[in-house]
Amino acid sequence: MNASELIDDLIANLTDWRGTTLASIRRIIHEADPDVVEEWKWMGTPVWSHDGIVCNANAFKDKVKLTFSQGASLADPDKLFNNGLTGKQWRTIDIYKDDKINERLLKVLIHDAVGYNHSRVQSTNRPHATRGDPKKKPENKIP
Image 1 (cartoon, rainbow, N blue to C red):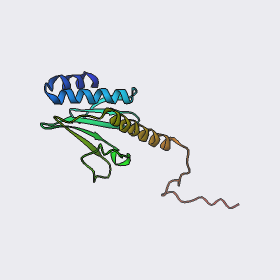
Image 2 (tube, rainbow, N blue to C red):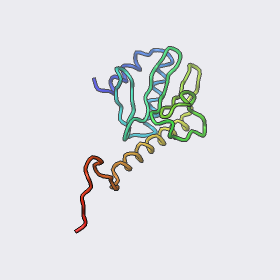
Image 3 (cartoon, one colour):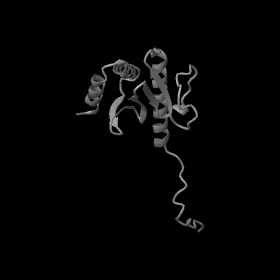
Image 4 (cartoon, rainbow, N blue to C red):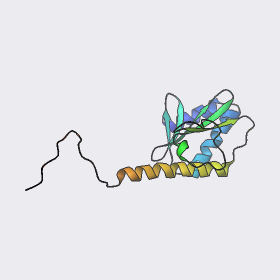
């Protein structure tokens, strides 16, 4: 099975509110970024990537956790992130049974995460000065 089929299977086997919530999150992610790639990592975690990991989701007994791998670098003026707020990299949104997902704000956050990943890819591909090999002795270029 490919990643999308594994995610389909996970959602189908979550026959309660968590399956519905995970399906909604998946739809919102694809609406926010039609070019996102679905992956299956860490022995059972749905992951969405575009120029790097955007987010992943896990269903727990009492919540669905949506984790943004570079969440600490994203602006969150509407306070969607509600867990992992002190970490240096990850931020999460814990969604509980009766929570309503603000689709518009979540799409903005996903779009921003993709933009952040894209800017990192561009900066690593940009020509820049290098220091050279620190173990190599400098050449004497005086004639």
